[in-house]
Length: 405
View 1 (cartoon, helix red, strand yellow):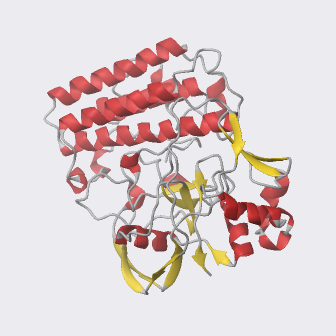
View 2 (cartoon, helix red, strand yellow):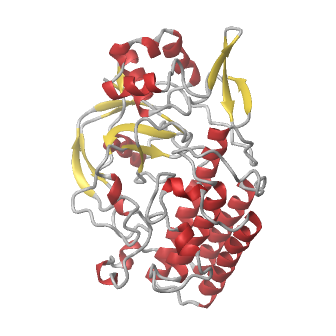
View 3 (cartoon, helix red, strand yellow):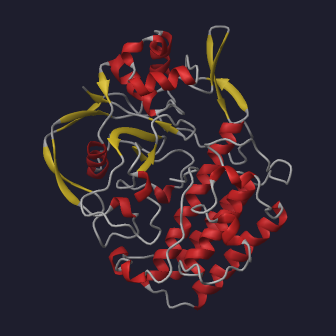
């Protein structure tokens, strides 16, 4: 998903021999469809950032956000670098300073606030110029498998940063221009899953995937029971009201340290007034909707809830097994769902051209999240997609479902 942790994206010159066989990522969309996707992602950016001007684009330096004006330029640069320049840093950008400003591998996160960046109007002009050149390129190109791969990489990267803009507006209490959809109501209860051999990961020949999804392999899954729906406000409020945030025995050592460090007695973005819980969505406080999913809880908070409830988080293999089984009772796409699985490579992993997407994050503890949220483009929601964040993060639109212990 669109990460605000510093990510790299410069391919080393002349390294193409190490790139994969792009035919493995077929079938790819038509040229016309790729053009539509790029335009759609661009229009979404315009909508999400319509309130930005040079003054409002200046935001506090926080580890979990990027300066919005930098992020706009980075999205444009990424598309230009991979789709127009083929991942070759020796090919010049249409903006002479773009590599110096927008390459997130080489521009440290905290320095992004002090760069001599163009103003918002010039940044939007760069974004528009990149899209225009993409349209020309795709119109004239015979659409090789490689070109189609990089066009889709640009689309999904753009989608991730569009979602990250939503995270930023929530973190900073700023308005969200497009309204969020209402969550679907799902019946409570468990799905019983027998022991089985399952295929985990993406098979070749099923379209574009990221390198951490490669490739499909068989694993054994024990019998388990998984909730049909994610945990709701009402269910999580019972945990809070019972003193769950003050009971040390419910928390891991890392979770308790996070709770103390952040002085959490309840989820961030909650407050109690006159005995009733309110939740902040962007710049508005509203009553908790009891049957809506709980959002903006960390992996540590999810684990503490599970211990309190006598349940557990699902492993990512369990989650994927049910999602791929197309069980009619299993609904996802309301919140990114924490799993108990650490983000690690599948056997035989090899990095794709955008080699910093996954590999640097295996070394530190990141947890896998699955599914997608109400601010995630639907085209990103596939059963094999692996999102990943550190378990103390909760600025994403993340929640969780549980399994029987």
